[in-house]
Image 1: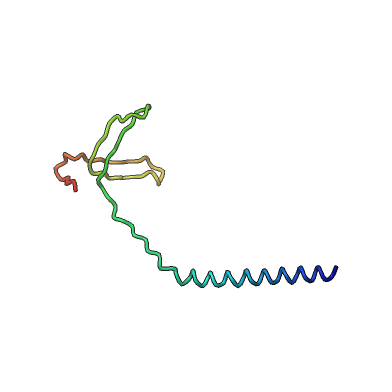
Image 2: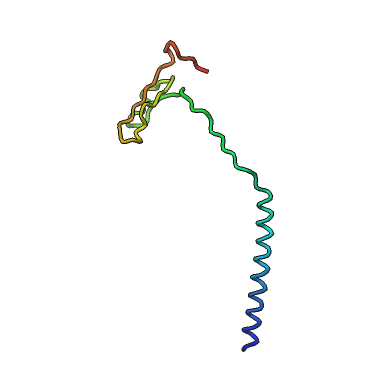
Length: 94
């Protein structure tokens, strides 16, 4: 009985050592392949469209132009959005 327990512990130890040695090699290879993370954030746009939809899901009204979000509601105040239509004198659509 003692021989079976000792053999079992030996096999467990051998498998554990082999598994841990293999994972260290993989970690070393992974760190060599990693590159610095760069995140590019594009400039905010002001042009777009505002679409109003009725209760049945149909487009009711749509404006295209320059959009200014005066308040997005994150401060607990009502949302305020101003849309300047394409026909505005100072609007240039690019």
